[in-house]
Image (cartoon, rainbow, N blue to C red; front, side, top):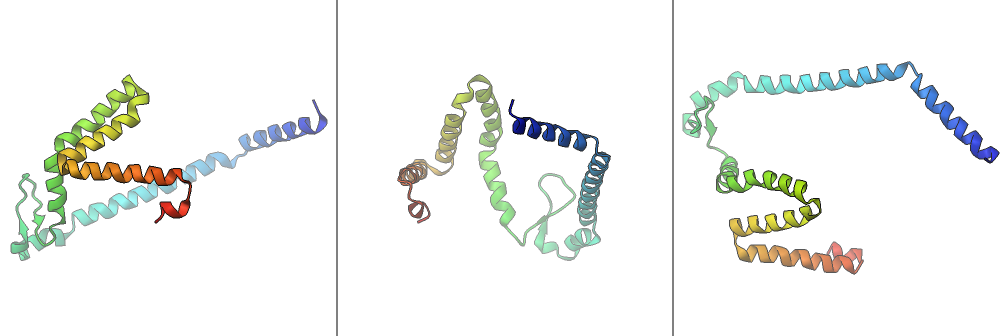
Length: 162
């Protein structure tokens, strides 16, 4: 073994031994753990204070026309001033069966044939878009992806960003 190579290996071993024997490595892990516990506790405290704020309970009483009772039996009322939540709710109600069965089929495919997983995601996404938005939209998305693959195969970055 050459002298230069052996000395470099010995230096690496010595450096690894020094790092393992360093007394501050346990302290550093304790500091990181304390940092994350403090940050997480602060976040939970802020969310808890917001959820139990008096304004959240008095506002529905003062502005009755902008709130309605929850259809799910919760004591909290739904805000009617911003209708953004209705879009997400209607999407989930329309596609709940697709959203629930997707991880189950993906896990089964990954267990049975891991090499088919990329094709599964492609086929499932195409079926999902077809069922939700129609065949024309699914075909348009497939054409756009094919066009992007053709442009990317030309290896011209300016075309990919155009």
